Length: 274
Length: 256
Image (cartoon, rainbow over all chains, first blue to last red; front, side):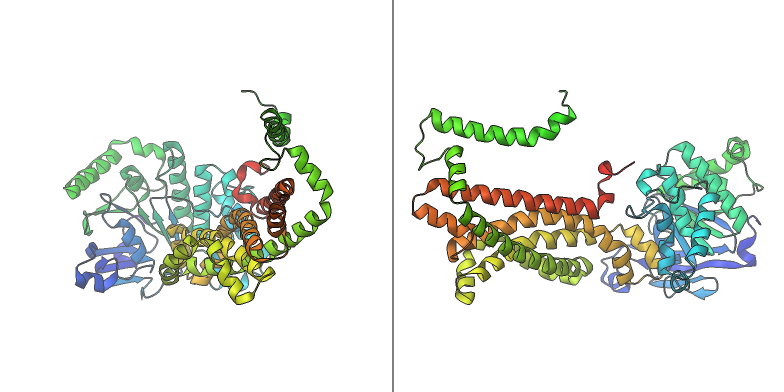
């Protein structure tokens, strides 16, 4: 995929001068809510892999909610795929730190959950079950979970559950993948394994990815562009293009050039925390 | 501490028999008068002698209890779903529920008698009133504790509130619901027996009251044992139902 030059060419996710308060405009007027983000400008190109890093509580998750239409800003505009966001963005898939698989469903049935909700699959699912099961199984295989479809979530390891949660986010073939600290709860080796899963997925499908993380190595390894957010109320402090050529191998995380970017970002975060 | 599986399996029987043996021994050792505390031998004697009225009245109590319990299940499930699904209903109803639950149900029986007269109806209603609370609370808890992230995942896909309830909320609340049935069924027995002993001509509660009036103390205890047996059987039935329907929530007993 094209690295880094997507933003200007074909904007896909666009937030302009966005400010947000939980509880809405009324809370802002009454002074009861605190500003989660203020004057947030961010543009992510189609097919781009963007990472958002920042000190804890800087409104990274608010950014996720605004971009997927779960919350609407009190100021500024949000648009996805050229359309202003006025309702939940169905072309987005989401995954969080906790896999949140349903324990009463098998892994395969967990993957089917979004299809039972989102149109047009919802209508088609009943009569085209085989087709969808086939799609789910191919997806599972692509993340290294072939043959695990009939296992229950609690029979899978933490890393495998996360892979399944990723598949669930992708089953309806979204154009935008939103990841909110998806690997935070995993051990270092499993995390790196999953970095590669995400890397390959992005490479293969050209999906637009927004990754919210506090792991700077993760951000530099995966992303085309990295946005550093300020402390609350959050806005973008620094935008850093990662020039490292793709495909990237895990080995590059030990090169001087890589370390340099991590170091530089770390400096910005330290600044932001002050 | 090495307990063999066989020992664990027979432990309930060993301990039950042991309790009766100690009871019998204490009665004989301290020469306790049977009208104060009859030994189990006398109690079992009374059970054999009065088996007919015991069985009849046990069945009456069982039916009364089950009707009240089923009402509680239906009503509790509906109210629990409403409370768990809507914050407004939750905020409005919860304080009322707690206040209502704090009222001793024995105090309600006279009112029920006033409305419905002596008999089975007050007993059914007392069983219902006393047992629906745990069902409501558990169902509401199961619904109210859906992970917000999972809700976000579904909402972002355009899921309606009803979708989220159907796909996540209700299945998730089921283990809470079936768990609460075990508590509710034992409470239902308490309710029906209370009402029977105050305001009925039938049922184990009434039988015990009459036996007491006639100073047939062994029969009073026989009634207690009959109640205990019914309670255990119904509890076991609910536990079985729980395991059957929501085995996924109890991983240890699931074939891995």
